[in-house]
Image 1: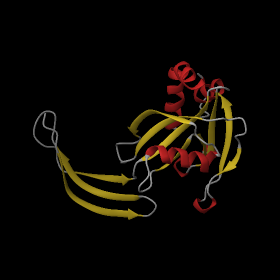
Image 2 (image 1 turned 45 degrees about the vertical axis):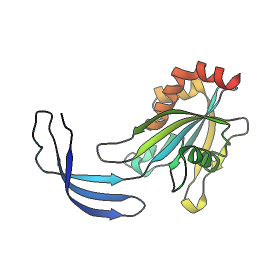
Image 3 (image 1 turned 135 degrees about the vertical axis):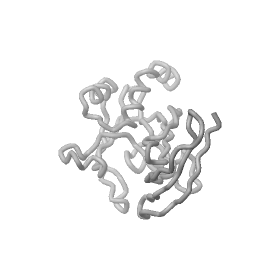
Image 4 (image 1 turned 135 degrees about the horizontal axis):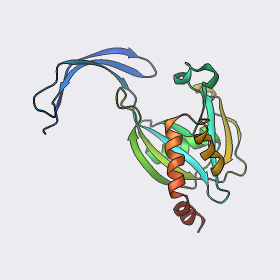
Amino acid sequence: MDKKFQILRSELAYQGFFRMEKLRLKHTLYAGGWSKEMSREFFFRGPCVAVLLYDPDLDKVVLVEQFRVGALLRPERAWLVEIVAGAIESGESEEEVACRESLEEAGCCIQELVVINEFYTTPGCSAERITLFCGKVDSAKVGGVHGLAEEGEDIFVKTVSFVEAMQMINDGTIESAIPIIAIQWLALNKVWLQHKWCA
């Protein structure tokens, strides 16, 4: 199948912190020919980075908790437990963003990084693509409230054991997809990672 699409019309629907476009488009079909013209809203956000901060010596992960507007339909759960993340700014590499955001959001200096994966978060409507890392840190003195005041960040930082982190997934305390993916990756790769970083 020769996969193609055509954007027939694009209209800016909103421009603020994010951008939303309304598209009229069509694409080729697996059975042959073209789809009917369709309307889709396209939420544009540039590439982002997330990093699971892990202390292999203490077998602990660093988690952050903050208010998330996307969760406001469940007011009692609008503060989500997540991992450090942020957008890539012009001229920055993914690794530089991981280090910058780890310092800003959690007060952590990354010692080493490994790439977990790269993926779209919500490709049905959004262009956001994440580079997900695991970063080696010393978690002994990590904690407290962090974030940039000028960006309205109010981020509570805590460390938990790997076992506790897995339990937080199993009991629904962690509801955001990115930390779930990262912690489950750690479950599959922890022995290899401890051997690599604790040698």
